Image 1 (cartoon, each protein chain N blue to C red):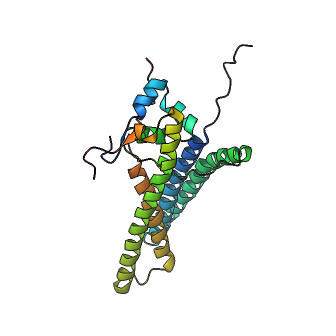
Image 2 (tube, each protein chain N blue to C red; image 1 turned 90 degrees about the horizontal axis):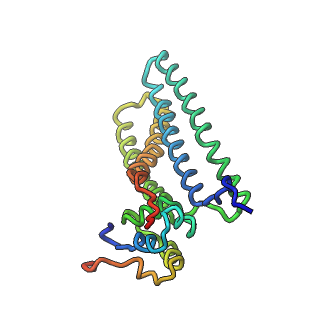
Image 3 (cartoon, chains in turn yellow, red; image 1 turned 120 degrees about the horizontal axis):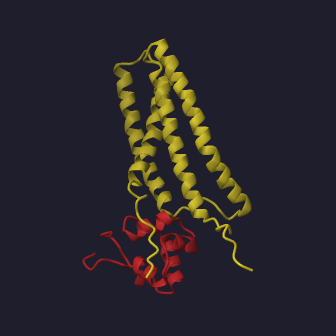
Amino acid sequence: MPESKHEKKPVNPAQVVDQFMQRTIIGVALLALKHAGNAVQYLVSDKVSHWIGWGNNAISLMIVLLLFPAFFRYFRLRRSDPSVCIKSDGFLSQMFKEAAARAFAITFVTLLVMVLVTQKALQDLPAAFFLNIAVAVCIGSLAAAYFFLTRDTDDEDDDALEG
Amino acid sequence: MSDELHNRIRVFRAEHRMSQGELADAIGVSRKTISTIEVGRFVPSTVIALKLARHFGVPVEEIFSLPEDAA
């Protein structure tokens, strides 16, 4: 029997996990933007704050649309093969761990600066403002560090080395 | 190529006529992991190094080696 042209290529679980991780990090970056927007709402006029609120709703929708297909694909794969899990020794997983370490350092310094600043100024702002700033810096620095560490890795050719 | 670790994955791929994607599928890692190891940007775990060696049927030190001037 001739081999079908549309025969389905087996899925590489590590590839699915990589895509899942990439999308999750983009979602995290958008979430950082949303928290930054929440914080800025305390500093601007009601009219501008209203528009930022709409922007935040749009970001929330984007996060759901971005992450849902990736989660769906990942969990469908896990259901068909329970041994599939986040591989901890691949390139992107290692870069994620390194980015998390950098984000921790940046968040720690930011929190120290915020403690010092709030002793002298900005005392009339609510706690929610500072919490939003802290969360935005924490996850924003994680996403930024991850994008920095994984930059220029998409152009490397998958050459078949035929000869 | 990394200053920490030299590798001959590209040579072995050429001998086996494999693409990065095919090698990645064969040892259960992503293509990006293979490409970043190959260019020396990522130093692989012992498990990945052993899987590569087992796949090509050679000792791991035939694929990976330290530079001559390494301490």
